Image (cartoon, rainbow, N blue to C red; front, side, top):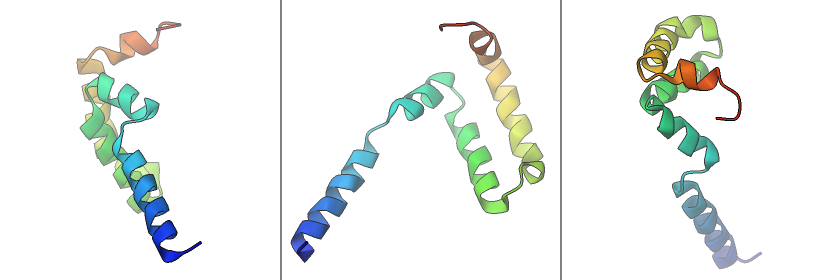
Length: 77
């Protein structure tokens, strides 16, 4: 693969990441995308959920406040 082909493939892959995928759409629809991002960033940095309890509590509060606990307890929603 030439350098130009490699750069084109890399650019195409980068542009594909700009579009929200199904996972992103589901997280955005919860209203807690920022909280989810902070929680996953914490885990990525610390590699231990027990060190992310503050972020987890913020996410849980958001989840309940937005009514997602009711939504996820139902089937086929």
